[in-house]
Image: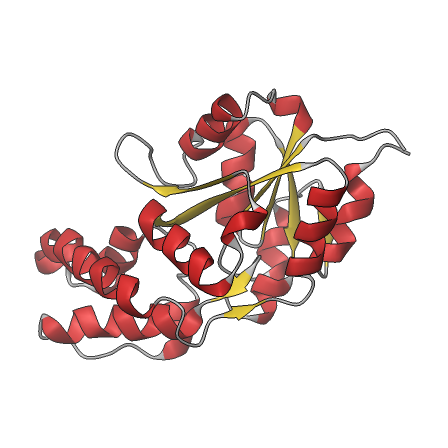
Length: 223
């Protein structure tokens, strides 16, 4: 069957993994270390997928937003020690990645986690070797929704944008794909985890909305 795409790029949180436990723990650790009370889990969950510095900026008074980078740094450093605590590979993720590998597709990850953080997490939970490339926030690459990560992956894997598709779970992922000029498939796992609102996703009109990762496979082929 002819392929529509050669490369599938995935978001991480809410698309491949449920990493809420470590994110919540480290977010509130950094807040409390700087004298701020912990936030409710639901409030943190609703920001997952947003760049870490921006998450802190959103929750600090305007007069204290200048310390957001310092808090994000503390969060990221602690994350390296406990990133896999409570981490769950979402249903269908491992089997979908294995299918892609066995059927000649290339795959990559583009996430708002730091590159070191996501690679460390995926190595610990056994997903790292499923990908041709894993990219997060790093020097010289702006975070989503800027298209830098997508463009970098396309360049490194020598793939034209027409032959790549992004799979994510939030409005930020949709915006990222649009900015990069590639198609976007949204899985509703992020809605179930509290990362996104389905009405907002539908209003942004992604190319496809599916309930789980295995449902992505059919769209990778032409009819």
